[in-house]
Image 1 (cartoon, rainbow, N blue to C red):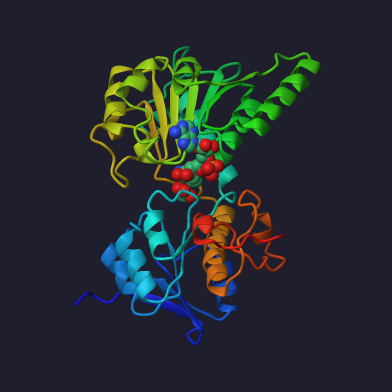
Image 2 (image 1 turned 90 degrees about the vertical axis):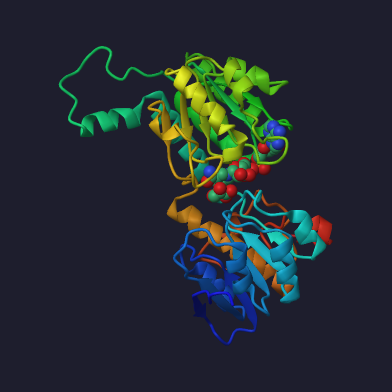
Length: 386
Ligand SMILES: NC(=O)C1=CN([C@@H]2O[C@H](COP(=O)(O)OP(=O)(O)OC[C@H]3O[C@@H](n4cnc5c(N)ncnc54)[C@H](O)[C@@H]3O)[C@@H](O)[C@H]2O)C=CC1
Ligand SMILES: O=C(O)C(=O)CO
């Protein structure tokens, strides 16, 4: 028999049973669920990544909805179990949902929620931080100081790259990619080249207007270019940041061949998903090109790194913390809970997942809607008129 899973229970007499596979920041999400007759069960197991078996035990015989995490494998086994338990709703506490087999969810009629928007600026800020840390060799310099090696200013000490006037390349100019681009353009007066399947019209307009502003003030205007192929970005950009979704088209988008096209002193940043980069090829490239630098928030075999990466001084590496600001993490928990609640209650789907602020205002009750359900169309769910 499987080992029982430890849980914490809120509102034990609630009519609807909602399970969260992890404790999540803040209490608003719990209060919103319990106020609408949900019994909330939060898994308190110490292990970081729950297995499918652990989650099956959490779902049990009766479960209306689950809030899960990007580390979990949500496929056929879990969605069929959720359906058997009477469940109709699942939400990732994340905007990315490459850990979810949406066709399996469709097969069992389970709505799949995600948490767009609330993490856009926070994630873009971390990508900007990684860009700066890599450009100015901040981690290397910090380690040097702590090791007591600093014995005076020197003309060659930790010389890095100036960003102003250079070109920032963005691959995947959606919500986060566009926010990152704006930060780098407005903050450091970089020119933009981007590659996306769709035109980033608002971003283009912003760069045009900002360029005009700079020109009117006697400064060099910034420019933008939409690349016809990703190769143009790889060839032209000094700093490249990756922000696409992870799917078949973006798996190993950056590999041995694409790395070879990039400038020898370029900076590559990844705060999207690890498998967008062939990490073994990246390690070889870092070894062969000491002036090439990377800033990584995500890894191909998370939580592990490919052999050799940790030893590379030209890599800045952090543990998937791009969305880790208090406001954002509490907001992600709220959106995930409201996705599950809304589906259980039969609420419609919010009409624009890019405009979810109204769900995050703690001073007023959220709209009676699911903030973002990625398979709403497939399940024939009604959209809110609001
Ligand atoms: N490191 C972290 O903590 C975080 C990582 N993420 C990752 O960032 C991703 C993007 O998030 P958002 O910007 O909110 O999503 P989004 O959907 O607004 O943007 C993704 C963009 O990628 C583009 N794209 C798709 N396939 C492409 C391809 N083959 N080549 C070039 N572009 C392509 C899309 O057209 C879209 O514009 C998420 O899916 C998630 O995996 C998101 C938040 C935090
Ligand atoms: O939201 C996501 O997709 C993350 O990676 C964590 O914020």
